[in-house]
Length: 160
Figure 1 (cartoon, rainbow, N blue to C red):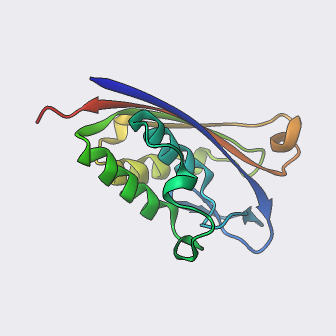
Figure 2 (tube, rainbow, N blue to C red; figure 1 turned 180 degrees about the vertical axis):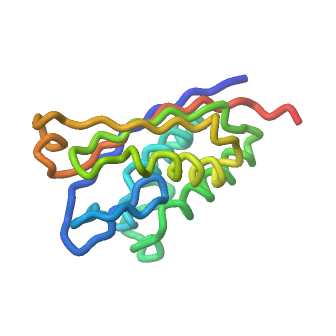
């Protein structure tokens, strides 16, 4: 049995915040605004897995009204999501994610993001694809106001 999930996450830039995407801190003059570390890429992966499992959305499981999630590393939320996935007998088939960001350039950080996500997802790096594109000056991404991340996951029923 296979299941497919899709998600999109959006966060605006804010001063005096760290820019973290895919669990990797990226040097930049501003970071993303959110209750947690605002890692839009990891949030998209979490929500795509939850969607594939039919478990509602990220806000249901990790509400921004709960103080225990304030400032939390999104990889911790991903670990909990992976636990839910494995508890139901599923494993990652593959992850395909896209970061839409005008600046900074993502290319130097993509491999580390893939490695970090693969480790938490209990899969190989080859099963995790991360790519990036710019907004070419159009919309909130192109104007440098924030980041959007899209993700599609394929989950496979673990027969082991």
